[in-house]
Image (tube, rainbow, N blue to C red):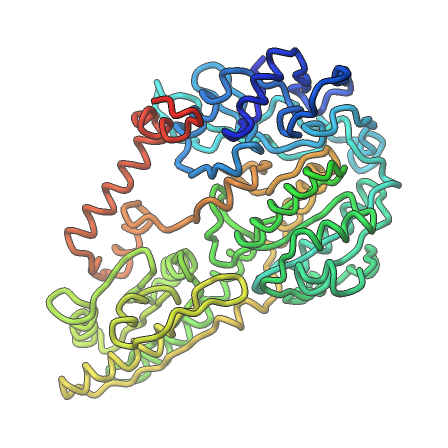
Length: 565
């Protein structure tokens, strides 16, 4: 059986050693789903109280090699203040389980109960009621014959034992950040899933984002009250950016007796969920925190895709089709469409590939330049001469460095801490007009920005199914006592540690085949200098070396708390 550890920060290392020497380590069952509970060892009289993280799980001297294994197997950056919450299990052949926190990590003697699903008529024909305790989902599925097994995540799904009695559950749901197709579907399926699968009757909605925890009344929610909300766009609970005050939020969770918190939002929201979990754990509360990642840009790390993305790509086709009709109906017509994508150009890339009417796609990950040989303006000139019209798709975060050079502007941020972007669509429109005027070329350009139309629509059939699976997986995990972010990894739903989805962003890899397929589809130049290409390739090489463990010493040495090398 693989050993389980929590990695301690350096200020707790001596305390951990004291635990091991004094024999005060608390044994934790490797399988949280097992009905058998291991006895909790009481602290000997007269002994000094230890930091809570030192008493959560069994500590051993090889904790740092576990952290090293995680570093070598993954490219994610682990912050020092996250170390006390990391749970790593190692197995044979380079297997690493990056596990999620569980209530028994700090409340080892809480009781368990049979899962109500075992008596549920809808599940009576299911071949296997519950997920196997040892089931995990690999982060990487394409491997070579001699590759290590790599990082895995705990598989999502119902467990045989749960840590909450249905009648004792008080759950709350909150939506934060920008709008996205599918929000109401997730809310509906959380309410209905809790009610229909686990007969939970106390479910409340938090209105208008995080600040709703302490600035407004909780909204009771029932399957009847949410019956048809999935047919509407937006969120019935309201949303906002910012407003995160961890202490106030947890104070209200504690005062109202909430013991399951479902948080729907992007990477900033998931960071907030992580802080809420940390404070809950510091207070020793029996509360599970389940994050459901939401970002229309599809820039959440680790997971295959975020809900609402398929709907956004589908709806973007309408804008691209309109731009194509406008462009092809005029002499030297240009249709310019700006799509969402602050840091990641997935919507622009997939919408372009799906359309086949796009002549040029610009995304934040791929730099471009305007003037000179091989530049965008020269390509536009050539394309108009060849085809008499063209369609350009640009992600909102593309070309921000070029705009800043021509339009000085102070750096400003929204309430979520995101940099406010300059309108690349308007800027490109003016630049193209000026270029054509200098060339004495007649030209018509139509600029279309469908951003808020796309965000506000209800989710399509594919996303509705995905939202349902995410919501049900979140419910099963919370009932089983885990705190996590849920998502699909390589086609399987998994429970992912908060720090993994908040430490980096998912971005288009311009050295990948998918981007090459787009360039082949549009026949546009890459607009990359050799320096840009070399830099991208080197970044990929470094990432691959870290994943394969070639840089083990260099990656792990700075992490050691005692300065070892």
